[in-house]
Image (cartoon, rainbow, N blue to C red; front, side, top):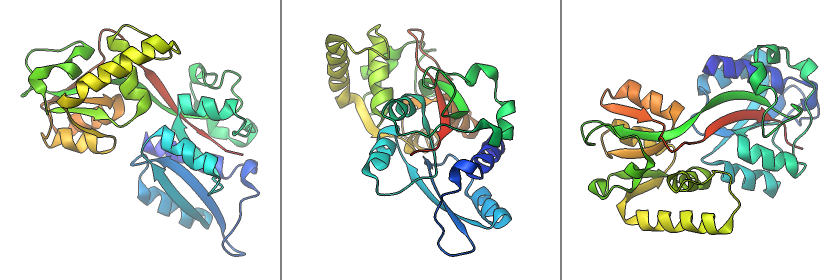
Length: 263
């Protein structure tokens, strides 16, 4: 999957939309790339630089909210950004994304048709999707009794001090909303207030609010339960056979991460 991602990145950063990139000298083009932490093999970036004689300024961020702040600050002119659906949708709506020339992206033909037009890019003008997955719960079978199926596990007092929540507004608030039976995308002030109160009630039970650290903490047995994305969960289960992942029966989020070129 990472190799496929890198091929797509390769095609995108060499597209005509990036002709205006500035260079540090007459010989090398400098590409400013913003991505999630731990989302690409850094050795591949080195290979890319050597093969195409370019310089990549690679910067990472922990959550889409942090990405949004970086982009809106204007401190860096990014050439390529990889982020999540809901925040890309916001940037498209606010006029911060360039329309892509898909004729310059030959690998786009290999993208599943179901992902070429998405809720966050319904006309398929601005993005190239690269990953999709779910939001759910990763738990340690040696610490948790039975086979849980609900969001209730994240509020179970039996695991006080052993629960990891994500330092991500979308995901933590989303878990609370689904536990209450509400839509992840609700704009109802009463429903949002109820979800906020539920998270406040949960706080004494939480060991930590983290993002990239969740996987390693669960692998190391530092916690019993964690809110986590499916990709990270699969990686963790590959390192610790006692871990298991499920999507709660009340429903959850199916997310799509994509690449886009900001204005």
